[in-house]
Image 1: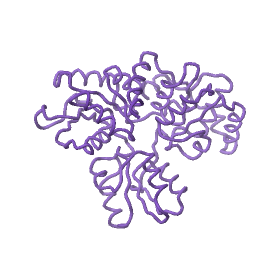
Image 2: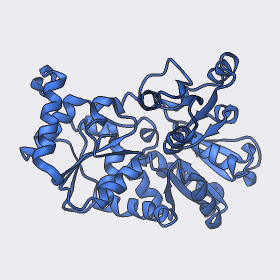
Image 3: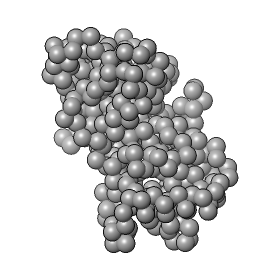
Length: 368
């Protein structure tokens, strides 16, 4: 299910009482529910969450780590995932049937995940099989809907993260001659290039025009990239890099591999969210970094490392807008609804979809 399906279902509207309460009142109510529910409640928070929410997280991390921690938490009856829709879906797939997963605001989607829906993917797969026969392994970034994970699992493929993409792409090439990489073309392109695949051996599938964008012989294609992207990371540009180089030449530039290929190529370091955090943590005092990732995280890193000079690679960046839908009023409403045994905010993946999606996740986890 993508965010448009959620909107069609008329997600419940935040009651006025939560809109009218002030920050300290809401924080007290959130903490009160956490205290009263104790171990029956687990609240994972994604790195991109705003401070008013992440302060209450029991754990913080990337989407897959938090889903795995949710699955490992056997005591929790309710898991309130402070992230976006696909993350809560993954948590629901990996947790036990007696555990319920909640998303504080059902409108918190992911534009990247929504760039590949199941109808588009099935059409693309049929067209690509006609071109390449049974020579393609589908891989999907974990930043995808449960339906896409399920499709990939059904067709013997696996999920990948930004941390293990290199390992999973290498594995896929031991299985098939080509890969279809969903839904982020930039992570797929950067990963394949790092593994030695030339850019002219990569094609792009456009799901809107239903065309394979490529000039050359189809025989040469090794990687088929879905035409999708992260709306946050695509906004870092080579102009941003050049400006930092010109104005602060001693500054290290570190970016997420969801950035465009040309930005990654010009940077000093590129890696997952966890890689970025660890690299800066381990850097000596006085180090200088321009970071190309989501602004809430950049600002948190700046606060946590006052001994280092840290800026955003693009000073005009905004936080992830869909992630920012999870705010203190919605969190308080969700937690109090759970405590009162109301059924708002539940994320539940169809059992057949979940089964095949878990196949894709398990193939990745087996190689972790």
